[in-house]
Length: 253
Ligand code: 13P
Image (cartoon, rainbow, N blue to C red; front, top):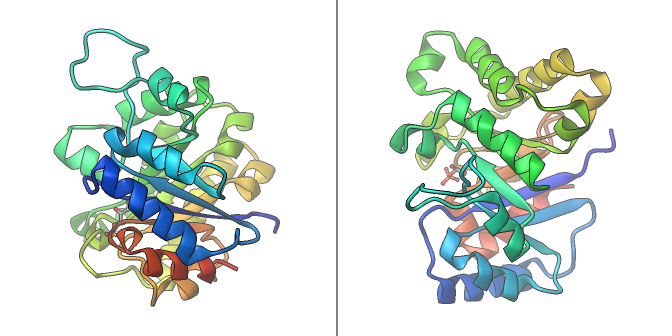
């Protein structure tokens, strides 16, 4: 398997622009040299993206955003268009995080529109899927994840799909300290890969990067990242701690 690892920090609603500069520098220093075969991304809040880009310039750290709007421009107060991210030099964008689905009424359909918009703009989407505890207990995890993936990729070409990143984030594991077991996480990442294989073909399924997210930390990252279907992590809380984030990055090998 020739897939690289992608470790991304989702800073959520944390860090001012000035704090973001400091954190990016600390992250670069804590990681040291560019890790072989690992892409490292940080996703600060919109207003800190520019500052983070400046601090990351010339380093191996790439910067992403946490959301975008699917329309190109217009009367959408408070929203950010793909163009605006492009102009800043951003290359990644998180789409459909469960917090966006839960608090900001995002649906599989808006996720799909955003994914298409990101691809049109040349941005790499990090597409989040995941089940709630209730859904897991109902035994519908596999069906739900397949549905989320299928809707998210509607109208996406195989060439585009190959470049996408999918993050499996069980909602019950986010910010709770409750990590999915290595087997649970790998099983669902495997289901995602299988679904991509059904939608496209085996080569696309082999190539696509699938991350796990949900209380991944310096202690559990190595075992999770060693699982065959897990190609990286989308890290929340631990991404705000430079040494912990660096440990996670170094666990990807
Ligand atoms: P935590 O790592 O804080 O659980 O957050 C995970 C997450 O939601 C990343 O997008």
